[in-house]
Amino acid sequence: MAGTVLVGAFSAFYFFIPTFFSVAYKTDTATTTSPLVASSTQNGVLEIIVTHIQTPVAVKAIYMTACAASSAVFREKLVHIADTTEVNSIIIDIKDYSGTIAFDAVDPILKGNNGGGCRTTDLKKFLARLHEKNIYTIARITVFQDPYYAKLHPELAVLKKSDGTVWKDYKGLSFIDVSAKPYWDYIVALGKEVHAMGFDELNFDYIRFPSDGPMKDVDYSWGHGISKAEALEHFFAYLHGALSPTGAKLSADLFGMTATNNDDLNIGQVLERALPYFDYISPMVYPSHYPPLFNGWGNPNEHVYDVVHYSMSRAVERAVATTTPVLHLGAQRIGTSTPALYTKEAYAKNKLRPWLQDFNYGGIYGTTEVRAQIQATYDSGLNSWFLWDPKNLYTKEALMVE
Image (cartoon, rainbow, N blue to C red; front, side, top):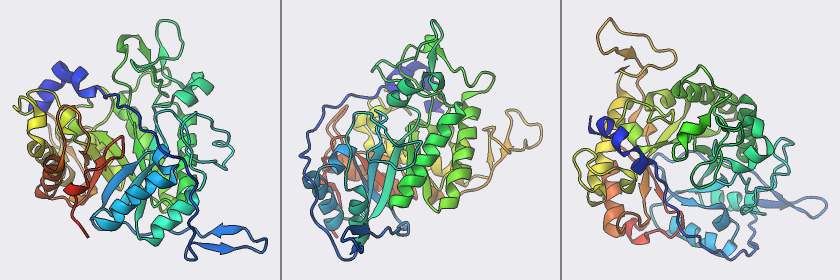
């Protein structure tokens, strides 16, 4: 397939993550309270009633940074989008690329996190207010990219072969070794605590090996003798076993080309190895992140509908299939054909919810481009989508008014 052929030649292009300029948020403290989400204790202290709501049949979500969530003024602009358009869900950063936990955690394994990023002092109350508006809430947790935790626990980090110190990518960010099991419990504890606060769904990003640094000097000291894809699948299975009993929905973000490639893109991500362990999978099919000539398109930014439709149609085919060329845990080989074919459980197509591009990179993404991606999602047989803009300045005109 075109994506498979191109990945070696264009991996540097595909894995490049643009650095977007920062946005300043006014950090007012929210003052609005509601009798539906708060009651008084005997001491006169407001007690927030934690609730959860069911997952909408079609999730239509926008992403909110931790800094935006910490600003009562800015976050209300995003809530207004959900109030007035088809958007019915909001994804909020709970642990971002810096490793900062965006609230004051209670669990001893989490308490004291001081990653230096934004924090929200009234997050529990904010979640209750969103639920009052029937807005579905999703906690985004950046997993293995965690420079804060790597500094505290260098023995768990991805290391440099050359001198045994902590490895960093080209942006100076460090990663935790995927096979470092003590860190798995840190992520599980965070998931349990944010679900108990009121988040309906836990969304895991950066569930992968690093890709854009001095890769020849990288050492995965915790995972010698195991493939990247297998190491990640073991983590997925652990996460599923530990968090599913909470009742939280679990979702995973994967690189967009996992929809079209059977290999692991050298980061460990394979669609068939993630499907069994999450309620939902979200390939990040941003057209700007595809290499030139992907599927024959000279500039994928000029084919936004086609990129999303092709990618998600392939993902649907793979999700519903009962056989796969991908080896995964529990798979049985079918016959002796070459190449090998393995058994696979068939999954509902709406287990897939793509991340779509609503930011200018590689081209201008306005009303036409954003709506084209949404339509491509529908035309591939799906009903849900996430919009990503790192500045949280969404193209409201691309959204249906409700």
